[in-house]
Image (cartoon, rainbow, N blue to C red; front, side, top):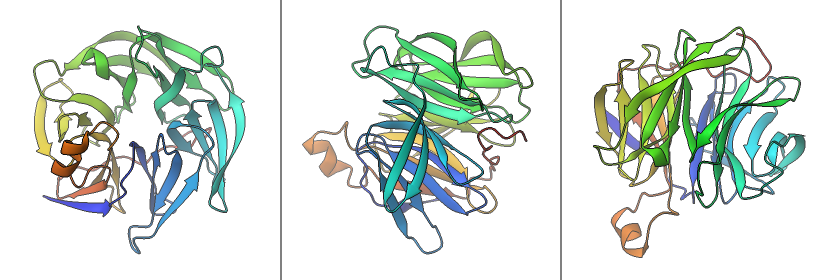
Length: 294
């Protein structure tokens, strides 16, 4: 196994890495800078597209656009001329601008599942939304502190969601055809370990890979909810993971600097970097396109 710096950044809050298989490029965001970033791993070139508001996550559209979950709700985004040009789609959070859309993923019927977070982590006001191709956002669950770690099992029978501040990863029974969730139950707890589950993805074997923010590690959790691997990384606050590369066998990891004090920044010089881990022996699945069934 080998860990390299794919892009030194540093990001304030790197998040939402996703591999675009058609383009063979890695996209991710700096949530509070804010910007969408794009890496060509062959040349090492990084493009940065500034945004007018904070961003939590995004999904790909077949026509080259993105759909993003932001502080201004769901936005359709076109990357052009160094800018991210945004068009509003739906805003389920318009009633409270202390809320923003956070972690999210597309299911394999092209629906965008996205959870919210309260900027001050007040109460259990975070909720889970599902955005359809018709541009309608529907509330699917709630009573979270912060919604993170959304991922779908490779057989499309499970959806995972982590409430990082509640130290719990939940698993639902997932109905792919209907786009519904049920049977919510605890899957994994971080109360007895260092770090909390932030962003996550599933590999082809159904294992749940996640970034352990505050814990300087990435973890692999089996479908039975048992940690089967913990990998130390050179950043204290890894934030999200994604399988990438031509064979989807490289794990990219975003990270943050915003939670470090001056002394910690000196101790963690790679904080805010985009990492790449090779040699894990695991492979991911292609990311679905918004509004497109696979």
